[in-house]
Length: 196
Image (cartoon, rainbow, N blue to C red; front, side):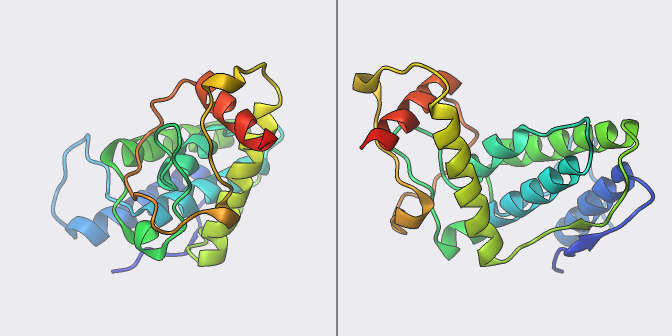
């Protein structure tokens, strides 16, 4: 069973649950699951869902969703200094790390509550699984990296290089995970790369 591309509901919590239920059914059918179960997603699905929820947050004047950025770069293969975004089809179809999937489900649940509390106008949640959507998410994340890197002073000597999505090598290691780096280290790396 494939995941749907469009989700509708009376509120964002209903739409978020529909996404969750669709992913759970794909994995386990009607079998019961525990209260701490999080349905498995591929890296490409994590990227697509994070982007869809980011677009939903943009519909409101109050909630914002900075978590999309951390989840997208982790799903693209960024986990340590010197990593590059992995733009290969193989990586996009590989199962995302369990901790990243858990973070997405929890963060999307919190965002749905915030959107509903802010009385955001409800529109369908459209999830773009296409390669164009994957590439667009990588470009947007790279832009945020470059922008944020210019906002803080950095130690150039401590930084290591990273490439943009348009320059990434498809043979980069596909091991992704939740970013364990401190934000300052990440920004230092990006600032150094921008000056190259």
